[in-house]
Image (cartoon, rainbow, N blue to C red; front, side):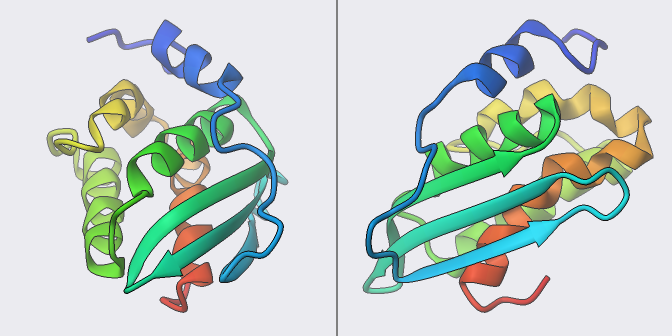
Amino acid sequence: MSTDVYQAQVMALSKDESHAGSLPAPSASATVDNALCGDRVKIDLTVAEGRITDIRHHVRGCVLCKASAVAMSAAAIGRDAQELAAARQAVSAMLKEKAPAPGAPWTAYAAFSPVADYKSRHTCVLLAFDALQKALGMGR
């Protein structure tokens, strides 16, 4: 595993347009800001029977923030609030405690493990999860 925060996998994710944009009629939306650096993430989602059926993100922010929104959006479809909260907790532990990266379907987050050494960048990686949880009415 590379120790470069901006390694190739993170850069590729940040350029990926999967799930970017807005939904025409979302079940819920939320926007969160990182006051420290100015990153902003907006999440639109549709939910049926307690599970995410579609998701879109709009990110104005750094490479880490954009890459995380792409990774989170790809893995969030089909998940319920409990699974999403557990994923956020696993990514946070990876960053704050250097715990192992989360397993499937969140394996793309292994690319963010070098960010653990840069506490000020943890919020950049977690901001998309925070917007998702806010949209789902889970706070943050």
